[in-house]
Length: 118
Picture 1 (tube, rainbow, N blue to C red):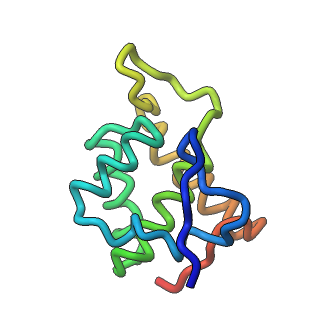
Picture 2 (cartoon, rainbow, N blue to C red):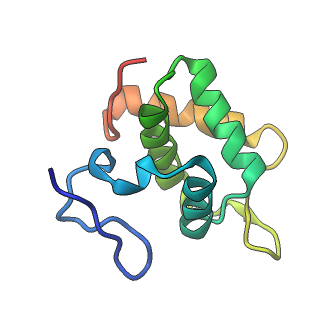
């Protein structure tokens, strides 16, 4: 099993095949959030909302949810999302749910992220 390494800008190197082998997925919740915050400038409320959304969608396994959470954050990364002075990702009113639904449609349409059983 390969482990993934982050390059200087915090992205997974191209040699690695998926988030599945990331040692970061096994961090305690707070440490995993801090890691996500450093990579994606997501605040705790947005992080918790995304995690809850995937749980409500039916992804019960924490490891699987974290893979999807990271795939979602990659999906929205750098797409001109509103950012405040503290550099936290903001989606606007109703924007997060809209983007999550777009992400799931994109997953089923293109299969460009890891498909997981619920």
